[in-house]
Amino acid sequence: MHVVRRRKLQVGMATALLALGAVLGTLLVFGSSSQARVEFEITDDPGRWFANVAGPVGGSNSLAVVTPGTRVDFSHRSRTVHTVTSLLFPTGAEGMPFETGAMKGSVSLNLRTPGLYVFLCQIHPFMFAGVIVDDPATEGLDLGETITLINGATIPTSSDLATRLVRSFFIATNPGNWQDYASGAPWHVTYADVPVRITGGLVANFRAVLNERYGNDLTLEPTRKPVAPGIGEVWVDTQFELTSGKEKPGTATAVDAVTWLVTRKVALPDIKMNNPHNMWTDRDQELIFQTQWFDHRLTVFDRRSGRLVENISVGESPAHVITRPNTDQVYVTINGADRNESVVELAPRGTGVERRLDIGAPHPHGPWITSDGSKLITPNTLSDTASIFNFATGKTDILRTGSHPIAVGIMPDGSKAYVANFVDSTLTVVDLHTLSTKTINLLANYDPINGAITGPVGGLPIQTPVSPDGKFVVVANTLTATITIIDTAMDSLVAMLPADPGAHGINFGAKQGGGYYAYVTNKFSNRLIIVDPDPNGDGSATDAAIAGSVALVATSGTSADAAIAGNAGMGGQGVLPIPVVYNGWVQRLPASWADQLTPAQRNPLP
Image (cartoon, helix red, strand yellow):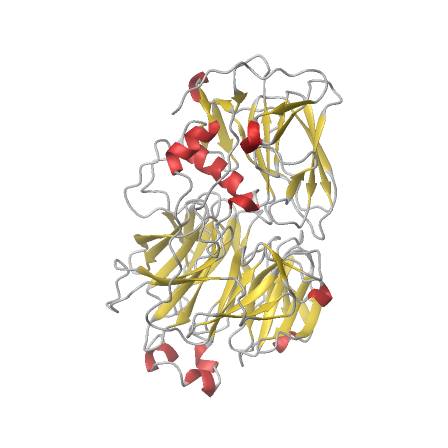
């Protein structure tokens, strides 16, 4: 660490403006008066989800530095519900942990214990607000001796895990810190250039510590086309991309899996499509079912033309959508729902709502359905549970998972499910016959104190699909920017590949000539990563490799219904390869698609 000595920032009774140079920008430090307060607006805007109304601090749109006793207000101007939840806080801090539940409204709290606080929305867990409560009597901005996470884990503020979390905060809350694969420029991350007080009373320069640990001004690997083409298209929700004709962000982006060119951008400005998050398609592969995660609607548009077909109100913060393979009915998880009837069933082609399923818990996120259409499994983010809904009986089994379960993948034979636990960085493996569970620790090969990595590692996992042939689970890990691969025969980690900050979505698509690609999206870059989990086809993922990548930006040959206005290709989240080649769905493809597949791809479980 680069240790510095600097006079303690003096705080008066009134708000003080401190000029800390071009990197820091304007830092607002509030006095200790009982009237002192800071306000965050809850918005739908990329990088400003919890926006400090006083303006950016240290390069972040969502950071404030205050003195003990300051009131922190969260005011609502989003189209949907959110929570304000303490992700991390000084160990033993007064009033912590803090959580509001899903709401459309405002909330206030007073922060009295010095140290670092980070709040998030549990429904949309890349929304961050950071507050440093600084004691004027000590040297350096106080981060605290230790911090406690939402799951109860306690770590030193000097630890690698703590600084990784803080680094992720600065990347998420400043679009200027996102990786741009279209620019050709080195990747630079702006941090506050200030002294901070950490474990043992050590005062260190914040920017120097992060630059030393993780580097800066890094050269990004150029995108490159895979040697072997894929089949069909890959659709990506570029959720943070800005376009003309609407104030809300988000497009659906189509990539030709043969040429690897970006062919279409669908923004749907006429309906003001808002933060499109996840997609699926109908049996004929003609329609795209699109959730608007910061709204209350499921949108349906024509895959070939981008033309709007339906725009249906389903409930607050619809997150994921999937069809039932045997009926082609459409199922949407209502992530913001505070009741148990939180999965909406729609008629085939999404023509209307048929009923709401009682899954025994609220707030489901990324579901999956067994290949025979008999069971729906949802991870329920706010209750740390997973629901197994039986379509034949209407009954639901509820299982405990780890902290903040966010996505599910199911074996193609229906034998096991894999639930990603976001905060715990674990997978809960569920035996669907006995309902017994076991845990895969994605941080088993990682030392959270010194940062040593001795094998595959995944921090803050999100999507966890199982390959159509049932051999692998591929996991996108947003904190560590890694892709981890699990061998399903052993339920053990066997490989790790690099991703980009905010690695988020994964789904499998067919590769020409046989085998599969796993397509990986990243929230804080504009790159789609194409992974070959088994390049030599021997059934082992130990030689898994990145086959290529695509910059998700429009070119002169890209069809679009609105001009791109900012964040070009950014915010990759939901990803949908077409045709859908998972067991149960692939057997029902139209001949025009099925004829492009090998016999093994048409029937992945012989």
